[in-house]
Image (cartoon, rainbow, N blue to C red; front, side, top):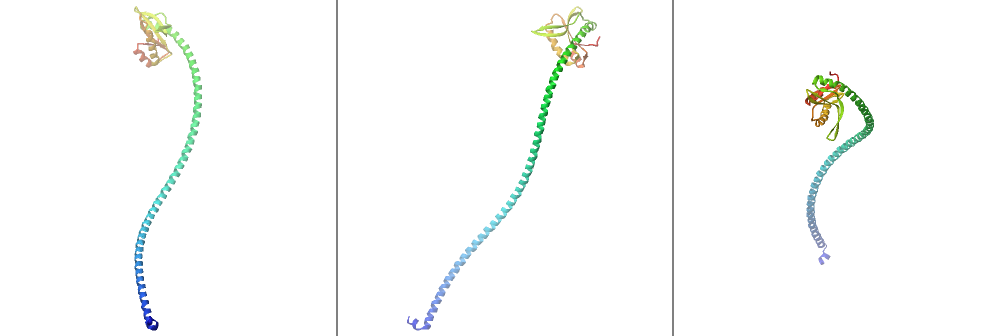
Length: 257
């Protein structure tokens, strides 16, 4: 202490020594701090490397996301185009449906008119059928009159059947009244003959078939004589001739003698 007070050089030496020690301690602390700084810097570098790697992956993900978004936008664009086409098609379809409904309305109106016209036609046809029926009855009776005159002579000349007259007759068969246009009883070579016939203006296959059903009913109750079946008319169709031949029915035209 005395030296520090009395000796200036000693005092400077001690001060320098103290300063050097402080400097040495400061340098140690600085080196320690630098070591910690280097270590922290190393950790920061590692962290920065990881961050850069993460950023790289993020950039790649962003790139893929941008690509996906581009594809999505493209797909959306195509969807919008498709939707526009669909809306246009729907508009055309609605327009077509409207035309179809208009056409259906016109068709329904036409059908209503047609039904009305058909009803009028049916009424007119019914009236015409009644007139034709009355005319047919008139012609039928006229044809029967001709048949009553022509047939007896024709039967005698061509079949050797002698029958005095032919008349319209109603016969009861199993509780049913059957009408016969031409009915007559006669003989051939001593054999009794019953003539049953039908008069039709035009004789086709169908008329022959109808007469067969009619004649079969009458034949069931005629057991005392042989039945001779014939049809008389103005016109005889070839189809009627073939059917009549199979069923042993004689067809006589008004012009035959």
